Image (cartoon, rainbow, N blue to C red):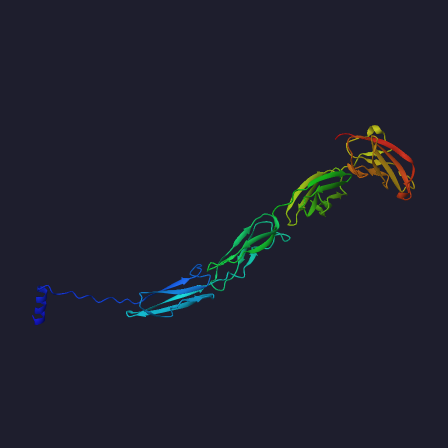
Length: 370
């Protein structure tokens, strides 16, 4: 053993040997970015962003580590901080993504054109679409409209970008009516080879269509009227045949509802001036007849029920078909059960001249309860 070894042994033996400290580990700077702004989604900000840096431990020098504010929209602005100390150096880069603008433009489209006359009559799906130049589009609204009925219904939707910014609601206006009009009350009055149909449409009925079966010329059915009137007189029918009439009420959107009735035309009972009263017990409105008077331009027929005159008419032919109801002096009169007297005069010249001959005759009839 050499002199050094001998010396160490002696020091150890004497308790004088000390443990020397280990070498300290390297501790280069740790650089951490601190970003301040309104955070959106998927790492995006929706406002200006200020970048600060946290560097540990103290005792370093740095480059590019001053606070900086990014105020422009971008898909990614890199900001780098470099720091070093006696133990080494390091750097960190923050990529700042800013999208402050919502998607634009945003548009809407229905999945099909209007069903009829500019109206939708069944549920319609409206899809909104848009574009976003910075973060890109994430999603847009899709809605199905199924009511209520309205002439200006509105569906609103928007689009969302990847950064989480939503557009303002965009309206899509449409006309919607899925409800048919109320059925019109259809009434009928049979006549001699004719029928008179009347109806009262609902306020939302725009027009009606009247169909008759059997139809014209041997056809199974024929549309005999289309329009917005409230009555129609059908002629050239066959007495004793049942005719079915169907009234279709339509609204502006084309929704429809049907009502119907059956009419059997029949020749009215005939009452003449020369016939006897005993045979004139009737359950239907009669046709009054008398002999033609040579030179007469018209006739005046007056009908009384009891002591009250209920009708005065001026037919040009020698007959008058009494109706179930009529207007006389502004009052609605009806052929109710009772005893009626009627008189006929021949008229000459102009109607306004009131030139009448002698009374041609009078007769009576009785309407019995049907």
